[in-house]
Image (cartoon, rainbow, N blue to C red; front, side, top):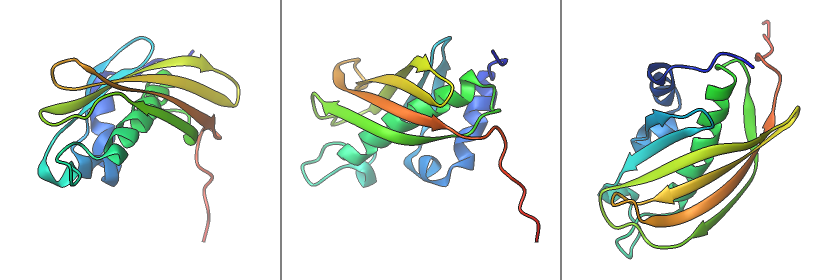
Length: 144
């Protein structure tokens, strides 16, 4: 197994992904089997009902597994989402959304992770399973 990345390196990765940076995503903790990330709620992320938009919740679930894979491989392996299934249990109205991922299976070509989604008070707000396809270790150099 590769050496896992330190929390500071995981936090530095988020600004390199413009969409996740726009959402205000932050890596809160690194765990042996995954990561915890969070997004503070703000008006731009809410839907017309005044609760967190479901797309933001799906994005944090997807990113939680992606960052966990990055952590697991020490930043040496690229991956892309192939499937995401999410169940929403309750709306999130204030504070932040928190996603705790766990890598359930790291195979040769696929990684399957689970994500527990909670609100600022720790109430269960959803659950997701996310599958990623592992790509080549380093992007191919395209000469010009």
